[in-house]
Image 1 (tube, rainbow, N blue to C red):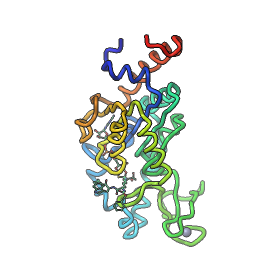
Image 2: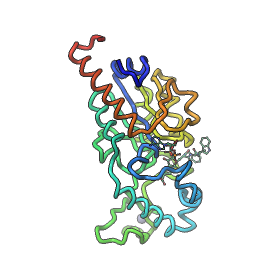
Image 3: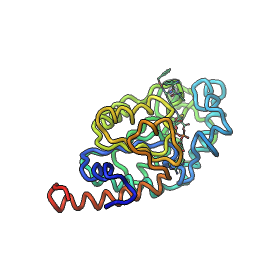
Image 4: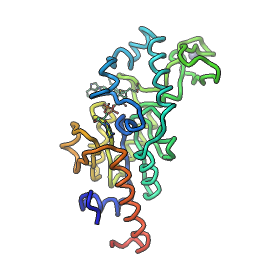
Length: 259
Ligand code: BJW
Ligand code: ZN
């Protein structure tokens, strides 16, 4: 009934109680946010350890702050793409649903997703690197000048997770619970090389989920996945949402029986 997708995927879309969508930078690529790795990725120009680490921030907080100010501006200026909207449509169909994202750009929430676990933080929040106090950027405050904490005078940093830092406990616990509950787990637009996030798809599969990867390029996850859908998130996810809507609507009409 659904030519682009396998029978097993269609069956899971029809019958799943819990669906999880796990996303990486490729999810936001079609919105205009650069990815990290690969062609055109941020790290062709910048070395991650020079900018995305506490060591880098301690060495040159102004430089790191300006880099994030620039990225905050880019991320604030773009809009969610049809892939993000398709994820919102999927959330409406399943009693159990979660988005787990490695992205800091807030685009899932801006699109309307409700349950979102942000594993690597959110660029819209900041806190004091010295005392931990949250810091709200003022409306008229020059975005590219490193702010100082009003409580202790320490340097303010973006609320994102750098290499060597522990992931936020509640987000991680929520993500693990979602992964383990999933009947269908979609890994979308991630190179699946950064841990512990990259362990979630495997965790989900071991707990019984059907694991589907969506990416124009294969990744280390590809050979572990049950199915690899080669292509862009903004093209494949709307097709999936369309099929799922049709299947779930007919399931509801027939009171849960198979068609
Ligand atoms: C499309 C598309 C389209 C394009 N549609 N797709 C060995 C084993 C285990 C762990 C480690 C290890 N060695 C070192 C570690 C630790 C380290 C790690 O994993 N390093 C690896 C690189 C080896 N991990 C950590 O440090 C983590 N913390 C931790 O482990 O704590 C415990 C600990 C404490 C103390 C000491 C040691 C351990 C923290 C990781 C934090 C990652 N932070 C960043 C920066 C966030 C802030 C910021 O944005 O600046 O998070 S790094 C960066 O990578 C960012 C991303 O969220 C993350 C993942 O990248 P992602 O999303 O996969 O993007 P890309 O660019 O890699 O891939 C994009 C994909 O999209 C590609 O595949 C494209 O093909 C595809 N694509 N267009 C669909 N239209
Ligand atoms: Zn402080």
